[in-house]
Image (tube, rainbow, N blue to C red; front, side, top):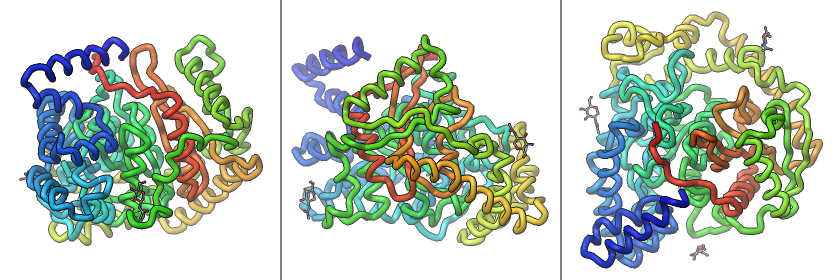
Length: 508
Ligand SMILES: *[C@@H]1O[C@H](CO)[C@@H](O)[C@H](O)[C@H]1NC(C)=O
Ligand SMILES: *[C@@H]1O[C@H](CO)[C@@H](O)[C@H](O)[C@H]1NC(C)=O
Ligand SMILES: *[C@@H]1O[C@H](CO)[C@@H](O)[C@H](O)[C@H]1NC(C)=O
């Protein structure tokens, strides 16, 4: 990193002295944030058309290797021109932070345009959605340019437990831009890959349990899983209506908050409603942050590891910035919470998926599949289409054939609610915590996302370092429902104090 950036600076200043202004722009766009891009638009150093052209070029160059993008919007340049015209005409709408900014959507978020919405599966290719997803309506209103759809773990990993994370029939295996062989995590894999590799400015993912937080962490970006219900799930291919949430995946906390503000629908003309007000430099002072060592900091016993050293340093940094660390906390029922089958989590998904997916398929204007049974039949019949066939569809089949689903769901959800209340929620209340902090990476046996998942609590991950091979890891701040303002303060305070993110280097 430290050897790379000055090199780029020298290179771009040489080019500035020459005539290749176009290439100079390209260097400026790399890693550019919304706060870099909007002033560049305003000062006429950059147009949305140039920005879209840059990303399209990067997608052509990098996507054959990374497979983060599943489809590019054929209308993206037309949309960019419209955004440029609006800005030129000083249309008040062009003042929004997202105006003219290209965004990539996970392939399970419906758009009523030339793009398909397929959850990575051939079964939905050519299906027609009735309307834009709720979050897409808001993005368009804010002036964002839908650049395309991101690849994902097919059906958000619900088709089969054997499906590799980041793999879908339509695009194949997505790759981590930092270390290609490292894995991308799922299921919002393409959103993570593409933002990390600068193939787009910002993106959206979805999470049921970890699908935003994990790919954000391992692709060294910022991911926000909002409180369930804060962002609309209308028009999003579902798993569990009780747990699904749509959220931003971006290179900085500030970008992520701008995107969150747009999809939540905070009013530009009422600043009191905006999440951006919580991006403040002194937001950490006096905040109480909990640490649960078992199971999240078990690695701390290994004094020599990069991760241990990084987190010791990070906790010191947070303390120096005024955070009160409440260490050595325990969640009494943690073993039950992180037991996927024992907690009821798996049964709840199985029971919830079938009615939810059937309702989604039913409302499509056009589709060759209308029910989960149709999906299973499609996968069997067209298994030649699907490189996925070797992974089967055991989860689909289990959901389809579940008997007594209603009763099992009632029992499972009652248990999930109880263990969430007695576990994470009780801990936060008892110790008056503002949030819980955990690492977030591949090496973990269990993830903070599960503490947050059962009752719709929010979380944010921020880049926290790179292991000896260069594989990224993140730090996650999780809190009770509606605590996004506090989590944003933690995430922003940490990011500004550490500035860890660096662009990927495509190591093998
Ligand atoms: C959507 O899928 C159809 C095939 O049904 C394909 O012809 C079309 O190009 C796809 N759209 C995009 C934007 O790739
Ligand atoms: C809201 O805040 C933005 C950024 O600080 C500022 O430009 C804008 O004028 C404010 N709007 C109102 C209505 O106060
Ligand atoms: C998870 O729960 C199931 C069912 O209660 C139990 O059989 C299993 O041993 C548990 N697994 C672990 C690792 O505790």
